[in-house]
Image (cartoon, rainbow, N blue to C red):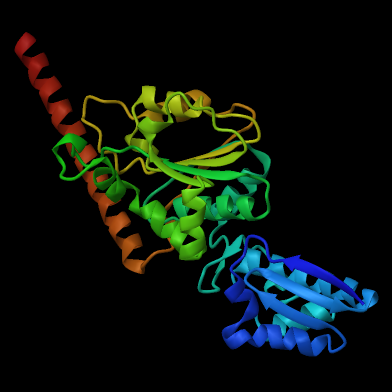
Length: 333
């Protein structure tokens, strides 16, 4: 008889063991010749060496399943023990699963283009209107990379000043002032990573969320780095950010050119960088549109209404400028 300790690394043991240890009891029933004792994230197994090899392989497959999908069912355990694919593995195109077990994958043509661009390019610009899933999908790609160990950390950033507000005039300490700007990034992460594990990863700086200004002077290596709301960066800010890129790093820059909150006299860094960097090898630009909107159907109608309004106002301004020019020409005569 031999004894081995199997460690459930990087997962929540509660998910693995099941409610009232139901999964553990099922594993025991599949290996009646072995003595199995679980404590915390360690499973102690005693018995015949041949059986030991099989249970080690199965438990590792189950651990990887929990790591990837944040879930494990009795059906999954049976499929794994028989050497079959689980239902989740059989579904194509899934990046990760939400904490509620919902598959997260592309839901439009341009979202799929974003995923394909991530595979072939190290820097991706994803630009489009609100609700097209550009930020959420980018974070899903980053979480997938972390789980598959192709990246060691995730770094998420946003410009800290939006909608005309200045941090110095807001109440609270620096964290209180900054957190509201970063909340959408927290929301997406909480949808994909269990709360306790997310907290642990943030404390260990495996996942970092910080305002853009905090990126200065850093070299970001072995990471997936996402800059959100990039339309609100100045040319100097986005240039600083893009040059933080280190070895084995992918950068995703997202933005919506219809929601620029910078002063009118200030150029958008995103707009300028798209002109300068388009066509450079290793950089992909994905332009999303209203067909990619995956929020409530009213969001598409709202986007359409604003686009029509902007077009009318642009034509009105052109007409006013033309009338002014004609009047000035008449005066000169």
